[in-house]
Amino acid sequence: MIKYLPFLLSLLFLSIPAASQSNEKAPSFILPMRDGNTLSLESLKGKIVVINFWATWCPPCRAEIPAFLSMYEKYKRKGLEIVGISLDQKGWDVITPFIKKYKITYPIVLDDGAVAKEYGNIRSIPTTILVNKRGVIVKTHIGTLSERAFEELLSDQLR
Image (cartoon, rainbow, N blue to C red; front, top):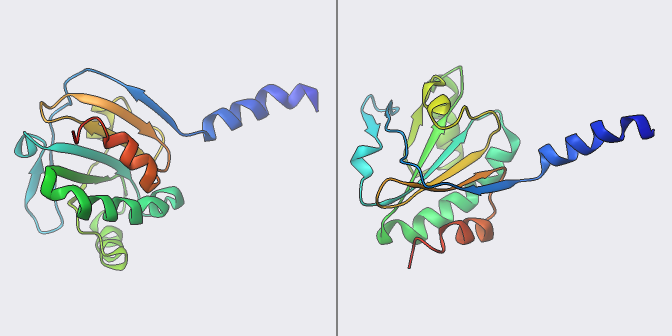
């Protein structure tokens, strides 16, 4: 049992949500939306942007959707924008019914992995990145965000 302790501890460490701070410019992107239009980070300049890397097959990603919907409704008039960046390899065939089922109202775009790579080679989902009004990454959170944790993530930016 003791010889497996380092392995077990590493699994525990990987399962703990993590948040970090950064002061680097958010990489720009232009990604397709389901209606055929595109969404660019540049078009959201001047807003607080929450970028969420997720997939339909990810249970923790599904678990945080109610908090995201609640926070979007609560703060979108105060300049909050949420962008869900799906990493689903099956594309819109699985994303579109998912959006309808979960009644997602914030923009969803599809990434082939290139943008995830630009944002630090995202390996764990959900990963949520907070970009301030100046386009600078101020926080990154790996793991599920509850509504309370989402509020804490935004607290400095909404003042």
